[in-house]
Length: 254
Image (cartoon, rainbow, N blue to C red; front, side):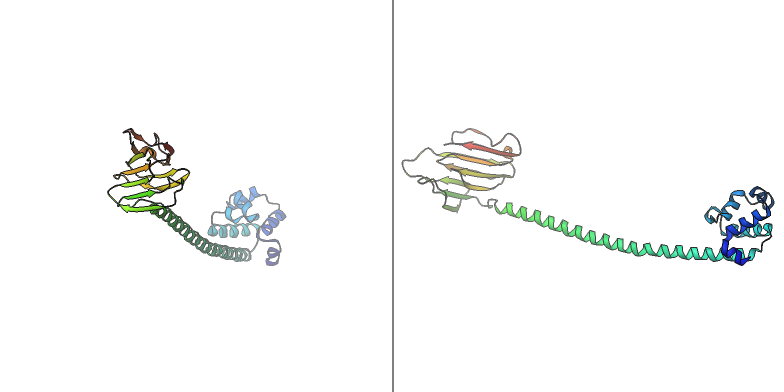
């Protein structure tokens, strides 16, 4: 019998013996009190459909005795196969652990890269902020004199400290009409002042300070958030550089 079981397998051996005796599964169920579906699972070796190892061994003993077979070789073979399958399952479970370790390692690498990228972005923001702050007017206001009346060039700038920020253009007699614009920022606003196609000032206007622009040629003030900057011209007209937030450009003539 052991040789026959080894050649056919547990389920095939039991089915062969049952068919040899001409016994149906229904008859085996009535005699052994083992449900037909469990008998089918045993003969097809679908062990996971049985209620458990202890029950399976009991069913094998009962079924073997009912068929006139020695149950010991059958049960020994079942235990050996069950042990082998359990070992295979344990080996399989060990493999994912290394995979989990690798996954954790990859996660750490991704986290490190994310931190590096975030740090680089933060550094970039700081540098941009520093760049814009570098164009901000100093705490003490300055006067800027541009000598560009004779040849329409702006290549000489002279800075000196006084109570308010002034950007003015010198002229030769007879004096032409002078444009005078006072800027009163209510919040931070970045502006660029152009005259005759040349930039004569760019920077951030600071609230609480006054900025006086004087020129004998037309000027254009452009930038962002002009609705935060109030202006007063030499005639006493006043308003804001822009009606809405965002980019703007406004021209003034003497």
